[in-house]
Image (cartoon, one colour):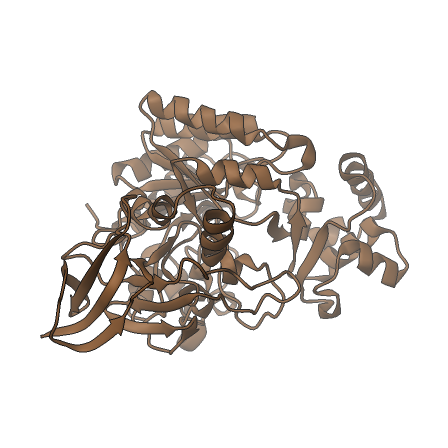
Length: 516
């Protein structure tokens, strides 16, 4: 007897092939039969008129920060994401900085002050793998974490010994199941690394047939140069690569992705293996300090820098020369020192405080441990260009909400939005092709065996939705709204979501990459 049969669904198997009508049977968390007229199950779901696909894979996630503290991953599973690829943009829970004592390490959760689990990526993964999750997650080792663990925030090249220590920590993570390494080349201290350092770390990943993902050094004026640097890293190291959330930000740079995608094609034609991912929104989301304070100042400490009148004056002029006046395109989503400003633009806050916009921005950053915002600087045509690229996957670039009430709507709505807005409404790609971008392609890129396809013997991680109705409802002004048209999510053969509402079953786990 089968555990579950999905009856009369329009199956899109993840390969890019057209839909076909069939039943699908599940036993012990595996797909065991796909065919017509299947009977004899403990439970049946009538999928008549609905589309049945593999569970969605978030190619670029930050959910690793909450696997111990918020393991339900509600905002992921409630939009159909059954696997998140985390540890991105150079950040990962481990290894912890040499300057952090164990009792100050973050993300402790139920483990109290016993934070030796964060000393290495291996110790973290071996602990996290035993914590049931609401959705599967796999993790990269962050380059920021490696540098912090070995060098702190120092803005210099590593010594030969320091580089070997970073490589050793990376190998330890890979030996224990990490997928590869991520670079966050706009974030300190990752941004202090020169290309040669990045190549050496990528070579370690290549030894394990892992992946190198990168928030490239610049996504604006120098996006072409930064793309070329990443291509060089991949060519010189022999690793496989993913350019994270690919875009060309700032109106004066719109359209450059057409050129950078051609660069990727040329590199692949010459033997490289490079992909990218994209989120379906016109706003990015990151730290206000990273955006408005030049990188060279971060090693000094933002509080110190922004308390110096002369430095403030200099940085203000640099921003004014580059961005000009008017910061109504920046929406604050979190600010621990001034929570009352969350959900307001920097221009609004400045008016309320009766201050200059940049002085207001500097005060927010100086006084806060965390100040983040949405930046409305991405062109709709560029989103569609990247999304249509055959080697582009879909990502949220988000973790989970935790206790936050204001955040980027991509945290809740990315995958339903891609299906509703960009497939059904705008026809950027076909439905089978979009499902491929969400399932089998990321499974293959990140080496997730048994995932990403509806085939007999594969894991029963499945989404069932109405292609005529599925759409995101999360907005910048109300990010908490659930999707519409998502009927069921099945994880490990168990129904975990009905009508976009999670039922609390933790069927997910931390997935460890096959080691050598």
